[in-house]
Image 1 (tube, rainbow, N blue to C red):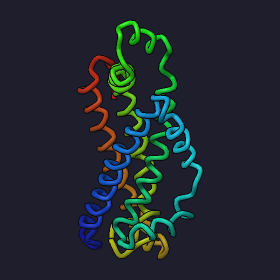
Image 2: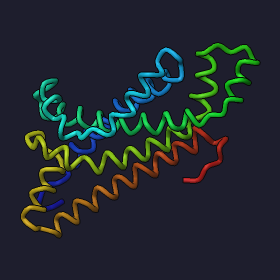
Image 3: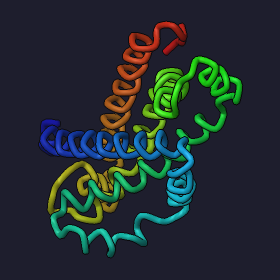
Length: 204
């Protein structure tokens, strides 16, 4: 912190990940929820297969979308995070018992009402848990993604340079900072889950 001026770079990495997570969660939840409707079911199945693609191999295609370093890194993170988020979310949705949908029908609910009560509200706790998991995936990808475009700054270029020069004490310090921030985020999401889903009575 005192010698490498690491705080500004830490802020850059954190804000980039938060931005990527926000976009990825919005896109993932939209695709996952609408995939419960017959017309959009194929969309959900196709997007779950994106997790098998290497983000590095698609860097060229992302550069066609944007040449800006920050947007390039954010786009790659969104692609990777969303593919895993959608896969996990659809697995949760597929685990909903048929009797839940049948009960909604007996209450004369339409497709959109069933989606709200049976899928969205009842599985909100799972959304928080998947968010915790994908945040961990995001932090593990930050250094790699930032190494693709070092002009935009962040912890990645510093971590890669320190590792290349075998400054293992600095590498450990940066990793420890990432661990503390990641653990703090995970804990806060757990607290938020307990507040929003108190009826589940889940522990952190």
